[in-house]
Length: 409
Image (cartoon, rainbow, N blue to C red):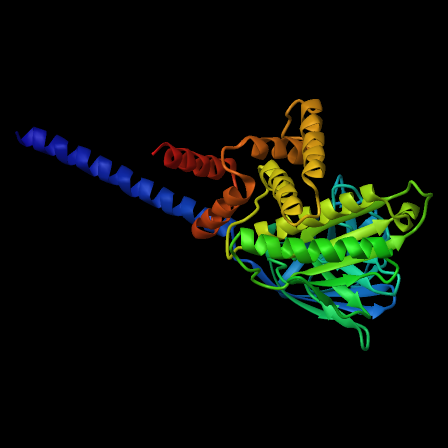
């Protein structure tokens, strides 16, 4: 018995030692995880319009840093338009990424940024030039991850914008932590259309102004009623005409939602010629982008980086319902647009992973769901805001399943 007791005591001590070691190892691992994820570094960023076609970005870091990883290259934008002013700081391109690096740690960094008229597919336009001297400046390309030697820190930004003397300066209403959104610098004050503010280039053709005003006013009011929610802040819609180059067939309109607002970039000689097809195209673009404004009009949750077909295909479905309900599209025009998307998806072999598949095949899915797009999206907005979860296919399927169960009862 004594021997057994002694053996048991030895085993208990052995397992006790193992447990203690495991506890120390777990604590060390937890400490390592925490050490690898330090808190964001407070950064004050002031963007100043210093001349007609130049800005200066001044960073003030709470602690010394050695680099800013700016992310993906945006075509030749930074190479052509950026010039670090701080001694020892250089713009470095590494494969498809760019950063500003310094041999010595620094707490201040200044970069001069010149006007840039290029547009690189797949990215926001860095800077849009208005004909009256105004500008849309995309702030997201100023944001990056910070390095302190081998230690990585996220950037916690406090943003300040300064214009030229007497200039109107408007910040995005929801820039978020990554500074997504356009800042406006220029001579205009926004005018109200529906429940949004608008700044439009003086050289925008009359037909385009008419479409923008009618679609924006009618569709914004329709979305407010359909989704049963008001906008939490007043978005800015800006329309820049960057040129009338090219012949009558040259017609290019880009639009995108960022920071809670919408920026449009218009280019091409064909803009000056009115045509019903151009009116329909622009109306559909305006209604589509405004659908995105409502998709992100939440206290939390909203659009994520995955399942792009949900918000893009969803915006197409929402847009078509809105345009028909407001009388901007006839039932025939709506059906023609829908059939065009369905045919495009068929040609893409129902591929939801390619760019146009987000729109055409995403629309096809919403077109075939048992719940109509508007009530389905109202339920998705409510679910996302209540849970804080981003829009996803599991969320969508759960709502559809609940709807089917309710219909069966």
